[in-house]
Every structure is written in C-alpha cells, then in structure tokens.
Image (cartoon, rainbow, N blue to C red):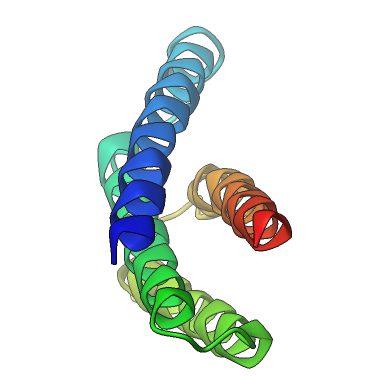
Length: 131
C-alpha cells in the first residue's frame, strides 16, 4: 500500500499544479477575449468538476492496480464512459435551460475536459510503464 500512497500523492500534487495553470490560463483568456459573454457555469465550477472526477477515477484505478489487479484496461474504459455520462449530467441544466447561447458554455466545458482526459491517460500510462 506504500506504492499506492506514493503514486496517489504524486498524482494529486501534479493534478493541483496542472489545474492551477489551466484555470489561470482559462480565466485570463475569458477575461480578455470574452468579457461580454455571460456564461451559465462559472469557470471554477467546471474545474471543480474536472478535478474531482479525475482524482476519483485515478484513485480507483490506482487502488485496483495496487491491490494486485494488473489488467486495468477494462476498468479504464468503463470509467472513461462513466466520465462522459457525468459530463452530460453536469451539462444537463444548461442543455435543458432556455439560455440563449449555449455554445460558449459547451466549449468552456469540453476544452478542459479533453485536457484533463489527456492528463489522466498520460499519468496512468507513465505509472503503468514503470511497473
């Protein structure tokens, strides 16, 4: 379980660092290039969702790997599908609302979504290659 703890702490620190940088860049770009656009979701809510889901899914995969189950591809695929479902559920209030311009909010959500997915795949690949 010591390996689990080391990998988990390392990943969470990296996740926080990546999140701070992405959030800062995203906020800066919105502040300078999208001042007049009113968004349904605040940027911090989008990032809170992504950080929570990414940390939770990495923890599940890390725990499963640490407990001796070395074949985690199927688990990763199920969790990735679950992440997509959770993303739709997160966006459901926007999609069902009569908010006029939904496209900027959808882009605002899915650009970080794919960046976090890339980061998660990168982190998992890196620790699987070490094993």
